[in-house]
Amino acid sequence: MSDELPSSPRRSSLVRRSGYVVGGILLGAAAVYFVANPSELGSFIDQMLRAPVWAILLVLLGPILNWIFVSQCLWALNRRHGEIARLEMLALVGSAWLLNHLPMRPGLVGRIGYHAKVNQIRVRDSVEASVWSLVHAIIANAIGLGLALLISPGVGIAQIALILSIPIFVLIIAAMLAETKSDQLGLMIRGLMWRYADLLVWMLRYAAAFAMLGVEITPLQIVLVTAVSQAAQVIPITGGGIGFREWGVGLAATMYKGTAVIDMRTAIGADLINRVAETIIVVPLGLWCTAIVTRRFRAAMKERGSPEDESVRHPEQKDDAGHPREQHPADD
Image (cartoon, rainbow, N blue to C red; front, side, top):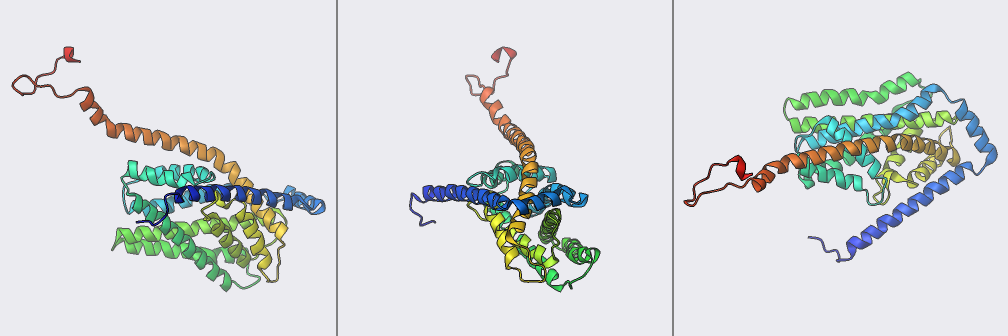
């Protein structure tokens, strides 16, 4: 039982709403800070106009890959507790992605409620799966950081990609071996595999965003920036780490004291590029997924309630002796 006072839910709601406002203010401040120096802004614009095609494509397509990989991670973790289709989870996560940008993170609450009503997955099991998803994200970042520390300066892009991709192959093999003994363990490992794939996409997105600004970034810098970015996004008082993520990435870049130092304005600009790309993707995608989830939920509730409705509309009728009486069309 909780020892919170009766007014605590109201206070919690006030804190979350206040955090959302603070996040919005921080996001606006980050945008103002980025454009505050006209000469530097002009240089950034010139760089973005000459940005490589691969960087633009990664920035725009990266959020879609993140959506797919996180969905598959949550599918694996929730599949241990009940039946759920992969496409169904894609729609749920897409809807939650959009709704979680609102105060109180209604997307997370709605997804858990949907699992309980439609997939017959208990609330505590859905919450446990979400917690494991967060744990997997922490493990994935630790693996990425460890590998980045092993990469020597001057290593080529192809070698960096190969080294950072090794855990994917290891986890695939581990999942296949685990499934011969336990489906539960196999699904847990697959969840970690998808989370690590999500991390790699985030790293590529930041590398592409910095490339659009004409800045080269080392693997270690990418890992550090990505870790801070993901930590900011789990702050419960604001959806998607709005505002907090931009300044967190900026501070992470300035704290790095390696050979290639990135200033805060550039780092904030890179994150703003990713934020704009996410918004372009999440609004139409989230609305479409929300429509699918709503339709699926209503259909499931209607299907589940139809037998009961039939019994109400056509109750069994009996004769005076208590025996069931044959129904005739006139009875309707």
